[in-house]
Each structure stands twice: as structure tokens, then as C-alpha cells.
Length: 338
Image (cartoon, rainbow, N blue to C red; front, side):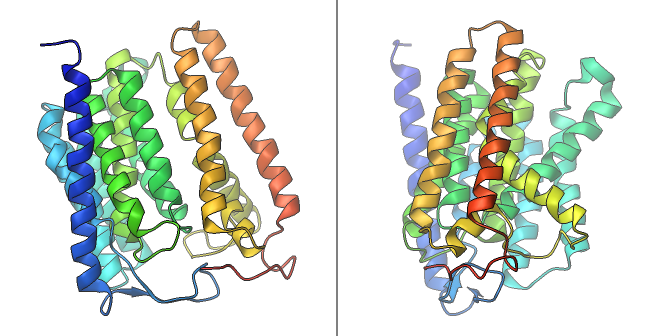
């Protein structure tokens, strides 16, 4: 094999996933534009009825990549099909929150069995349970953070591409990361800067499953030595999603209901454009990717120290942003622009 062959094959894989995702999103748009609409309300940021479910192309692109994962590929495909399928059902006709959570849990199980989380650390049973919780958590994190044009897809694109490069081109983890990046790339023209099509739960669930599988796959290879890397790469969503969830729990709110309390939602409600918000989150993640590349050869203590410092910085930025853009109900704000 020539030295450049893995790079050429990787670029080909990204292009194939992007084209498949783009084409299927377009086909779905033609079907859904009069049938499967996300209607505006007081909890959403858009003003125009918009078809949802366009992330079905991402799910199919990821399923098409499953054979390149080796033995865990079948488990990944089954888990993805169940979890993204639950999202698709909810896009077509709302599913009760507990029923959707049960289906997410069912889909997470084969992935957790295929890639238990650090079994050498706490044993096989606890490792499967921890992996299962991780999958469910990341599926819901990407679902919660999918509320602004381009945000969820662009963050998944960056996470997938960075994880592929850190894992090494040609590895199963890299193929999964590149398929995720390509699928998200193919969807973005439909969703940014103006949304003609939304991911829907089928898309956000597929993104969350793929991100979780990337984390578990990469940690299974190095025994958890680089467990700091996913924290860096997903820090934008972990900080915003985590702090928002914590705040809502403290205030006694029903955390499973739609809301406008995330920092990105508050920024848009106060006048920031969807494009600027997407760019700001991407810039944060871009710096995190640079740090991860630098830390790949650093001592483990340094890597963890920088990662913790980065997360603390994120908490501080979130706090400052919260003062600038208060929660709905504490300031009249401004209506979001479509």
C-alpha cells in the first residue's frame, strides 16, 4: 500500500458519506415538506414551519459504514437502527418521553456489550452498565443541543473528524469518525445558514449514538489512556448541556420538556444569528481540537491538567454568557430570527 493510500481512502469515504447524506436529506425534504413539519411555538427558535427528520441520511450513511468496524459493526448497526428508529417514530408522530427513553436504552445495549467502558478498571458487568449510561447520555445530549441551525451537525462533524485523526487513518475508529463527519457535512447545506430541513430526532439520535460509539471504540483500543480527549472534543456541548440540565434540576423544572434555557438558545433569543452561534461553538471546539493534537504526545498528567483547566474555562465562559443573555422569564429578550 502506498503511503498516501489511507488518506485517499479516507477522503473517498467522507465524500461518499456526504453525498449519500445530502441526497437522502433532499429526498426526505420532498416527502416531508407538507407532511412532517416542526411548528413554531414559545419553546422553539424558528418562526417558519420546517420539515424535520432530515438526519435520516446521516443514519443511513453510518449504517453503510458498519461493516468496516469489524466484529462490533453488527452490534453498532442494531443499536443505531433501534435508537435512530425511535427518533424517526417521534418525528412522524410524537412518542411519550418514557417510551422514547426505553427505546434509547434498548438501542444502547448492544453497543455497550460490544464496547464495554474500561472493563479492566471495574469489571465486565459494571463496564457494560457504564457504557450503556454513556450511550443514553450522549444521545440525549445531542438531542437537547439540537435547537439551532447547524449546531448539532457541525459539532458532530468536528468530533468525528478529530477522533479519526487522533485514532489514525485506516483504523475502525477512524472509519466511524469519518462516516460521522461525512454524514454531518452532507446534511449541513440543508440546515445552515437558513434551515430548509431539521435533523429531527432521527438525526440527533444517530449523531449521539455515533459519538458514543467513537468514545467507547477509542477507549477500548488504548485502555482509557486518552479518556481526556473526548472531554476536550465535546466540551462545548458537555458544558452547555450539563450546566443547563443542572440548573433546571435545581429549579425543579421538568427536564424532559422542551425549553429555551441553553446558552445558545438564550443568545439567539437576544438577537444573535444562528450562523454566529454555530461559528462561536465551532471556534471553541476548533481550539479544543488543537489542544488535543498537542496533548497526544504529552504526559498523562499534563493532558488531564489541561483538560480540566479547559473545562473550568468553559464553565466560566458559560457563566459570563449567562449574565449577558439571561434565561427566558428573567429578561424580555428578543425574538429569534429564522
